[in-house]
Amino acid sequence: MTSPHWKRFAGFCLCLTLSHPAWSAGGIEIPGYAPAMGVERSYRVQKATETNISFWFDKPGASAMTMRGAFRQRMTVLSRDEDGMRVRWSLSADLPEGIAGLADSYQMNPLYRNSLTAYGTAALELETDLNGNPRDLSGVDQIVAHMRAMAANGPGGVPVTGESGVYDIIAKIEANPLQIVVALVPEAQLLATGQSYQAETMEIGQASATSRDEDYGGVNVPVTSTWTLESTDATAHTATLSLSEEADAAAFSQSQQPAIAKLMNGFAERAKNLTADQLASLKRASKIRGVELVVSLDDGSTLEASEIVTVEAGGTTLRTYTHILREDMPASLPLPAVLTAKDLQTPDLHIAPLPSSKAGPGIMDELSIPPAPPKASQTVAPDNDGPKAIAPVSLEVKSAKVVSAPTSFGSELDIMLTPESAAKFQDFTQAAVGEITQVLINDKVVIEPRILTPITGGHIVISEPDSKLLQDMAEQLNLPEAKILVRLRP
Image 1 (cartoon, rainbow, N blue to C red):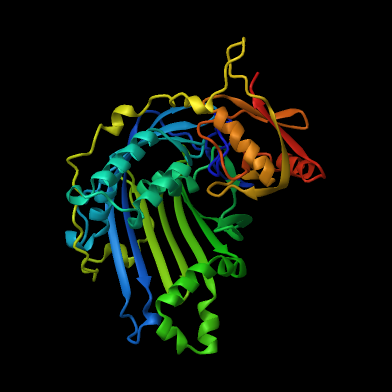
Image 2 (cartoon, helix red, strand yellow):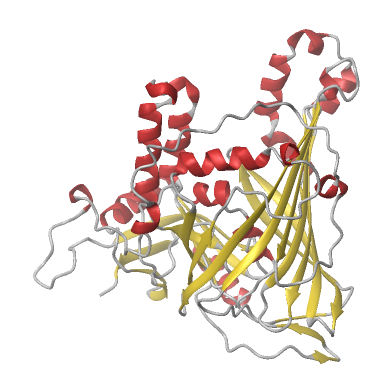
């Protein structure tokens, strides 16, 4: 296993001794996540999206569109150490048995099959934090090479043009390989939402609110999260949690203005006839998320999850539904009607399968291999002691603040470097790919991550269960002329 590295999905660096669940006067203890090693778990996954842009048409509902999909995915925790876990997901686009409705009403399945063909793999091997949040991916080079080969050959042997957007997708994946996880197995992140590496004590009905900032196109949007322990089942040994999240309306509306302007340009003639109130309404945007989670009181794992996300902007509404159920457990959460309807009106998309005859070498053969050594352009000549001779860098801090971890119960210290230091940090991490490094604050080592890829953007995220310790670090780093030292581990 490699050590944590600085990414938004950075994990906790400590592992606590796990205890058995207990009911007490102080509340109910939900144990830390302790999955069984080497045991394959199967999950039924149902998804749907509802899109409505009828505001822009004379006939209400004329442009409402619904799509759905049903899948059976499998997950195995291969190994675990004090830093994180290695997890394999086996992916399939086939409809599971017993799904309600006609096969052609599940249009996400052929789309997903094309995605697997485009990425050239039916399995992903991830490194995660101790909560199960993905933070790195094996086989990225092979996946990108396969995508480039697919684009070069193209349908009928005609190369794909730059205008198609395919190369933009490849560039985004190269910049952030976790985009592949988001595209192929978002279930990993939803399951991790209900899992915490450390035990948590909660009282039924008592809400706990936290907040964090999310970046939307350079706009920081505050998001308020509220956790509630809804109920427990002593027989099934489970707890049901709910999570409600809402983005700050003013900041989120600001972040969506470029997209709203583009939409209005597409309906320029209709936009000319809108009233002042309608125009004002168009420029407002909102995002809310509701999640229900059934968590095991034996090992802290998420057994079932149901999520609904609603985004309204520019007169349009997009609502996504996701339900995940571990197959060896009975369902207990209610399912939205869109997921269970036998008859569902769906668009006629005529989804043609991508040719798979030139899929190239199997990505599975490349998994479980340690990261490739850095390219020659990234290395510095070794010194007499063996390791690379890469000089330490002193980095200036623009801001430091404690935020709630995006998909867990814990906290993180989010450090933003100045532009000059962000460039220095990128150069350092590019040269140090494959090496274990140290981050020092006030001459004290706080984390020792291994650099797996060059880090851009000027963000350093430190996760730690002791929020007071994180707050102390934040106060130190917000002092004038505060600096961080980053070096190779001696």
